[in-house]
Image 1 (cartoon, helix red, strand yellow):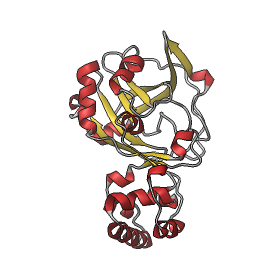
Image 2 (image 1 turned 90 degrees about the horizontal axis):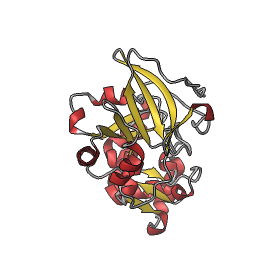
Image 3 (image 1 turned 90 degrees about the vertical axis):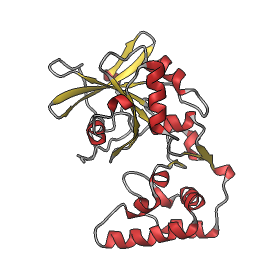
Length: 266
C-alpha cells in the first residue's frame, strides 16, 4: 500500500464546507475498481469517554448522509464511547518494562514498545512470557526480512492499543490509551438499525488501514476493497477532529473543488 505521510493538520480552510450546522472538509476522491468515491470529513467536538455513539451519529452524520453513502469511523471514538480505555495512573511499570522498552524502535506508524506504558499494558494483557517470546521472534523476523511478527503473535488487542503519546495534539492521549472496540460488528449493526447508516470501524493511520468491523449490509464487499476507499487516511493523524468519514460514490459526476495537501512521502 502507498504511504501518505502528511505534515500537520489536514483541515485546509479552502476545503471547508458547511451544511446547516454540520461542518465538514472535502477530502478528495479516490478510484477503486473503476468507481470514483468522494470523501467528506465530518468535524466533531472532542469526543470524551462515555459518550453515546448513537447520539453522535444522529448529531453529526444523519443530517449529512445521503442514500448510497457509507461511513468510516475511527476505532478510537467507539472505544472512548465504550469506556474501553486505560489510564497511566492506574498502571504500575515494572523494572523489566522500563529496561525492555529501551530496545524498541520508533516507526512511521507509531512509537510502539518504545513507550513503556504501552509495553506494560501488553504485558498486563498477554503475560510477560508471551511478550518476551514475541519480542525474540520479532527480532529474528526482522533478520530474515519479515516484519510484523511481534504483533502477529500478540494479536490485534495489542496492535490496536492507541495512546500514551506524549506528542499527541490532545492532552487526553498523553496519559490515556484506547483499546480496540468491543464487538465492532455488533456496534456497526446497532448503528445501522438506529440510523440506517452502513458503516465500518477502522484502525487507520498514514501507513495502513484495517477494517475491524462492518455492517451486515456491507458483508458482500471484501474488507480490502472497503479499506481501499480510505487508504490515504482522510481522517488525518493530527488534531483534525474528523473521525467520521462519509464515503460517496460519485462515479460519472463532477467532484467538489479540492486542494490536496502535499504528502511528505509518496
